[in-house]
Length: 238
Image (cartoon, rainbow, N blue to C red):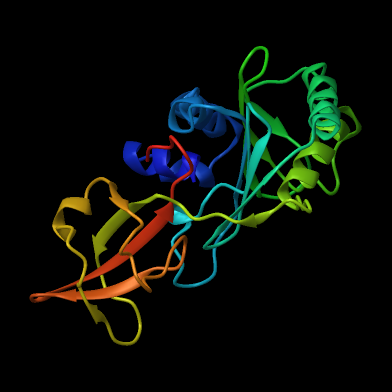
C-alpha cells in the first residue's frame, strides 16, 4: 500500500498509533506519490486495514484504480481484476467526485469513528491526496458524499471485470521465518537484492509462487526469507 510503503521507508510507522498531528505528517510524506507511482491513474483508493496473520500488507494491490481512459482495476488480497467503464458510467463517477470536491477537504479527513485508515487520490482538476480516518459507514453529515464514494469504490463490482494478468511484479524479501516449512529459491533473480528495496521482476516464469499480501517462506543457503510478489499495474513502479 502506498502509505505503508512510504511510512516504512521513512521509519514513521509509529505515527499510526498517535493523533491527528501524526496523520498530517503522514499526508505530507506521501503527497503526490500516487500520481508518480501509477502515472495515468485518475483515482486511487487503498484500504489500510490490518491483514490476516502471516500476510504482508505492503504487498497487497490497491483496492480501486481508475485510469484516465476509463480502464479500471480492482484489487483483492492477492490478485487484480481489470475492467472498463462506459462513458455514461465514467461521467456519473466524475459527477460524484465533483460533488466531493465541493467539500472543505484537507490532506487528512475523518469519515467516521474508529481507527480504520484509507488513502484516496483524485487527480482530475486540483490533485487531492488524502488520508481518511474512521469507518465511512457512520460518517459525519459534512462528509457523507466523501464517505459514500469511498464505500462504493472499496466494494466496487462491474460486469466488465476480468482477471488481470500483470506483466511484472514488485518482489520484496526480508530475512525471517514463517510458521511451517520453506521452499527452495528456484527463480533467477538474486534474492538478496530485494531485501532493502523492492525489485521489478517479470511475471512470466513466475510459476506457482504466491502473489499479493500472501507471502512465501524461502530457504536459501543458511538463511530464511519472507518473499512477496505484488502485481504491478501498467506503468506502476514500486
